Image 1 (cartoon, rainbow, N blue to C red):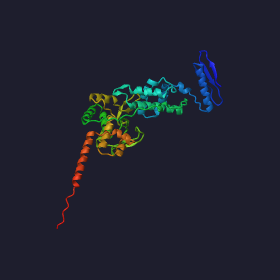
Image 2 (cartoon, rainbow, N blue to C red):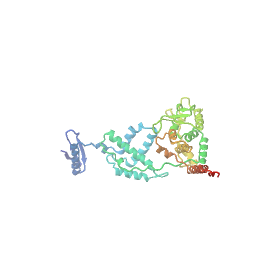
Image 3 (tube, rainbow, N blue to C red):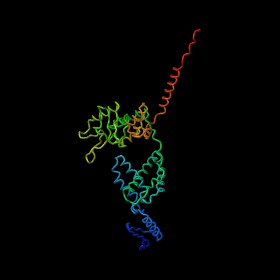
Image 4 (tube, rainbow, N blue to C red):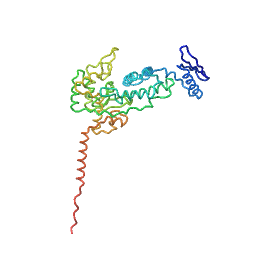
Length: 370
């Protein structure tokens, strides 16, 4: 039986002692609330389903995210770590004061709708950005339920609709834009910028894959790049075109490379004296603005490269082997074929069909002589 005690401040403290269970206590503003809680808790103990929820009631989402970023995020890739840190800031800004137990599906759905209507540079926050924020929140609940022992019984994120992924980007590089872009990066004082852009356009490699390359990964004799640390954790070997091979040869022969530096594209030493990959985010943004290409992202070079492989007649399986896409569905998001190229294909098909029909006409049969 629960013991109810009125405190000097006027609140009511409920205390439950039951064999086989730890002593639990909780304070309420009214005696009625204390009685209701005591009755529910004792019933759960009798049925053997009682879960101590004090941890989830005391821990705020802000505290939980800080623990997640400290314990879980460091086990992931550097790019994922940066992304999760950024997403956590938004979640803390909007929901950080709620306890994990208080966050309901209704509250999280409200957060989703509010974020989708927030202004951004391109209009409003994209569906995918909000999807990824919700994915982080969902995984936090999964970890808290399975490992942190906070008394959580369910993940509220699973009970709400997620924003649709939206259409894949359809930004292609026109011949004139390519000419201006390559001319600009090749004029830059550091030749590594031009080399990196050219390699992205020739190979379809991701920015992180290019910037983190080490010299032993580059085999100029066989004209291949061996990648072991990729976004989807699958190693792959990337073949090099003649142009990409020439660019890599120039990068490998870079006369200013320190003797002890294995990075193909290296930056200046940090405060600790270590050299890290060459960073070009700032200069890339400046060049886009100068060339009036505000909507063109570095990752669009990968879109362009993969689309050109498909347009060249290469099979989906071969393209996936080069690009590293695990599923044909993901690969199709990158293969945005130009409509004008498809028009030319249709014309070519029509000409072949016309030629086939013309060649299939049979000569009239000769009448036998009387």
